[in-house]
Image (cartoon, rainbow, N blue to C red; front, side, top):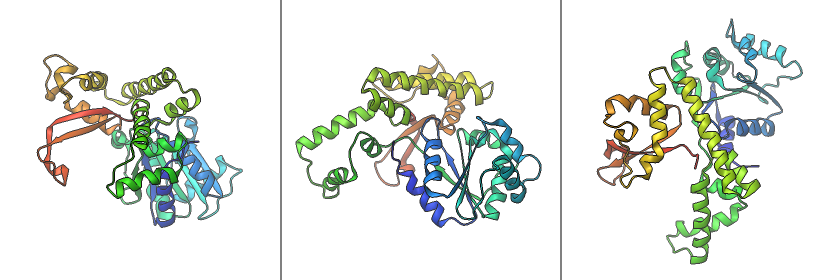
Length: 315
């Protein structure tokens, strides 16, 4: 089972929140559902899971009145074997982008503040236009990412103490012994190839076979393409897809700066900039901007027209 740092962030929210729900955003396949589900089962006495893709009929809970009492009545009738315990019950609303009314209802659930509510979904930023009233001020936003290198080391068997010893060299600005550096570089190269997607890492741990790893990566990349086909507007679908598929070619060039002419011969930013923004809002890509001066804050020195683009955690 993969351990995730974000569990501690969930705990901090649980212990310190006021009148707010937690909205967890991120790309598909990064482990949102698994991690929140684990959190709900381990840290609450009662836990309710609502998924609008697996069970579209659950959308009826959010039809009609959005008052908290009415919503909880409908939930209790749907999950009749669950007893609601104030302060000890978590309601997890997954794939919330499929039910705009549920997004609006977060405000009223937060105001009542009797039970904890976490919502999660992919491509939320793109679906704002479908929500009649965004619950500004009543939801705490949290963006979840794929596993980082330290979490990858946990997965392959390193314990916190061993990683702590390596960190000490950095904290003291002292040279890492060659044998340790060689070992860590081996795992870093593996992480770069495998990426941080949980399903891919699990496949690697099960098989220790990079061919199997690539098959799992291909599944995820195809699911990203499916998302483009499902959620992008008709005018953006082909352009977003072409931009996405061009990224390996962009990074294989000697000059790895993103160039629109690689997407389509002779094309310019005017045609494709919006498509890149769509992919970024969908958490499918990451921008890495050039800076004119290596000084902090780096954002102040970004060159907006010079950047590399990477895929989001797929290896």
